Image (cartoon, rainbow, N blue to C red; front, side, top):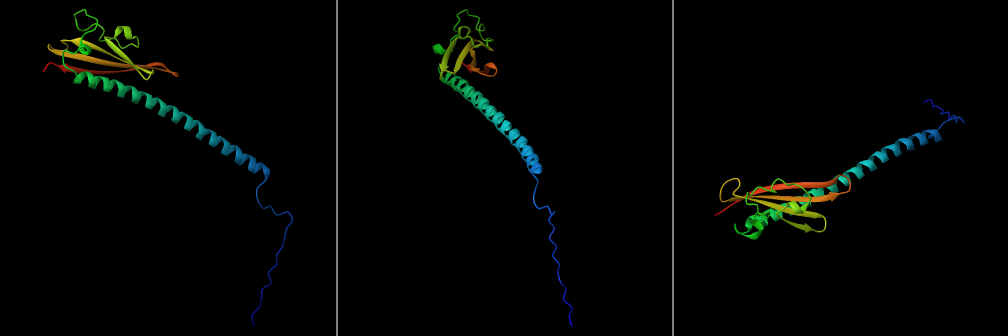
Length: 155
């Protein structure tokens, strides 16, 4: 004969099942701190993306203008040294947002100012150095500028 075991279930009234309110509050505080960190990271990433987009647009406009200038005939009036002093270098090093220093300029979308300076017979005779300068205002760091250079040869 087989002996059967009797199972005794004891129910204790002091048995703890689940979490206390203090454990839940601590867990919620840790979770909230983590979520705040992620939210701040998202804000910074969004600002970085906006800044990158602005710089990309600015360089695109400068490059577009530079390519347009390179496609023009060598004697086109956009490729003349606009200050008329004859040395071909005046104004070339001006990387300012002040468009009065540039040989030529244009405003794009009311945000960007693309200007370009021409130096004739620079770096060699029958060549023109073209410096395209794009500038814009930002809310965080004031004025931003990017400069692109190219040389057009008389062909």
